[in-house]
Image (cartoon, rainbow, N blue to C red):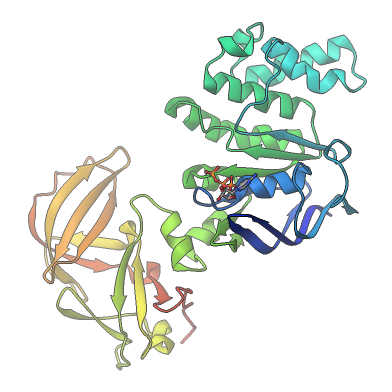
Length: 364
Ligand SMILES: Nc1ncnc2c1ncn2[C@@H]1O[C@H](COP(=O)(O)OP(=O)(O)OP(=O)(O)O)[C@@H](O)[C@H]1O
């Protein structure tokens, strides 16, 4: 059953609309990541679900019950928001336990639960500290622990790793999914970090330009982004975008790139005659020393070895810069200078230049 069901939600402030006609469903136990750029309205959306703000239009249903007009404390929703909201005169332990003392738990059960959650979030050693004695990351994890300890049916998490340092953030990204799954809660998780979204979400809801641009699994969003706007938000380095005007030809739609005539797969034949934007993820561009069929000459301008990949900055003969990435960085170092590139035909993306919608390939 749908635990969270949002229908036609709209919210505007004096400064203008944040979003309109927003609908989203999260199934029981599902983790839905609400992802989008700063200011897209992610926090506003959580506030509407929590009941601390009212929508201008639309309905919020939790567990099948219409709670649109219900006060926050009756909704059975747990929250950890960016601004921590810890009780300043209570220790971290008491802050976390406060979620439980309100219910009917024995002192032993409370202690066990607080310590278990604190251990998972690596704050076991600071449980007796007051909030002012905690780092921002520890405060944030204390707030997260408090929300988790209560085992709410619906858990709203607003960028809980924002103030956590890079190493811990990486570890938490690995550990949080099982922690959240074990809680059994249905989770709406807000982040601005696409890697976090992909690591944590059963599905990702991309909030962009006043509405949900796409709601799908991380793999679907990466491989089949609904629009240029969505494609740009996922990937590091970001996707290469090249304006092209495919023309029909027997070998597949013909385009020009780097002064060469190349062909798109026949499954894009229906795009001929449309102004398009070719989307090439860095890993879909393959660089080689020798020309190959459908390759185009490039200059390797820069080579940046990262841990798990090497990023190449390529310049085409007509001056366009493309970023390519290769797995690993242990091969013989690639030399700067002339080379050839081609793209992995199975991994290309094509978008309408007008409006940015993705053009899906069609079976030939
Ligand atoms: N109480 C308010 N009064 C007026 N404007 C508001 C209010 N709350 C939010 N806004 C505006 O609504 C828009 C969305 O804000 P929101 O905080 O939801 O963005 P966000 O996607 O969570 O961004 P971030 O990732 O930076 O936290 C912003 O333009 C913000 O200025």
